[in-house]
Length: 68
Image (cartoon, rainbow, N blue to C red; front, side, top):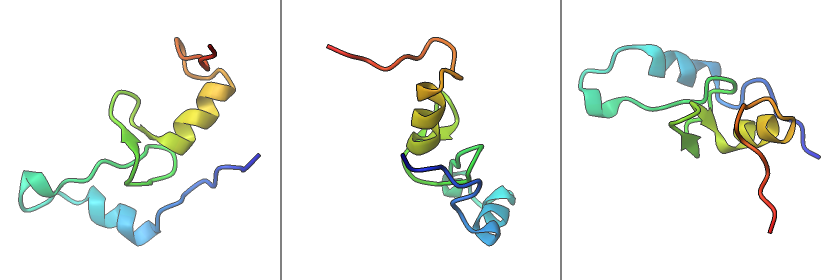
């Protein structure tokens, strides 16, 4: 199984997105754990990779792997 890196995004990209944008529509959502800008889940403030890892370990309350 793949291990999630601490930061997937470049430090400069994260710092750039932390600044207040000139226009509000330019704001990007980033994962709180790794800083990844894509595949972001708003409800949990995580990217899909971090969400999956935490869910499989049972660290997100109320979330479990589905099976049918």
